[in-house]
Length: 292
Image (tube, rainbow, N blue to C red):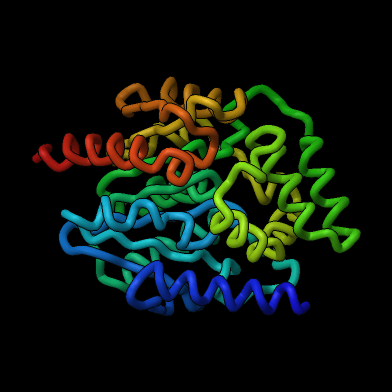
């Protein structure tokens, strides 16, 4: 408990230096913390599992020069209120949250960016709430239903759940990250990213305990084709084959989409190679904003 208290203090200090002010808004019956920078057409950044708004710290300055860039912490993620084993942790719920968040801030159509599970969520937002989306950028969303049947659950999820059951939350988070990105990946992350992932351990535990068909519901090629907003698909050059395959399959489903590969990065492209991601995303944005 002393360690957790010290960790919280360090993170509060990190947030204070990360942005001038953490803001809050109520949407879809939930209070959401968020940060923002800049003015202009809005960009909304949606983090993935074991994350929060600080996962986008390397994007705020670069994207905020000519846009209003906003990063939110999703329901149950730090520093928002958590909940012991929520039964409603689905991409559809979070998609409704994101749409309500956009409407609560009166942002109008946004350039929507989602990483990992946040990308799964943003695909639902673009499909179900097209009126709030100007473009959608998806960074390796785990839409496993686009691939041939996989072992359920994957071994690394079983390992993480076993560690959570023993109360070894830090080790469970590490096992999850190493399972997604490759052995040793957690130890190669910056101390700041590691701290924030560990702070969201309770959320990950709840997430992984959800039934797989609820946590990762079926999304088909036909569902993807219903998205009308310009789509940008992003994968890391060093990412696991199954995540890269999902991105490639989405491109097959949506031939009009754009796709890029970020060098020197695995799954966490926006913090592993921020300049590479920022440059590619801004180039995509430039093309979209030239369109009538």
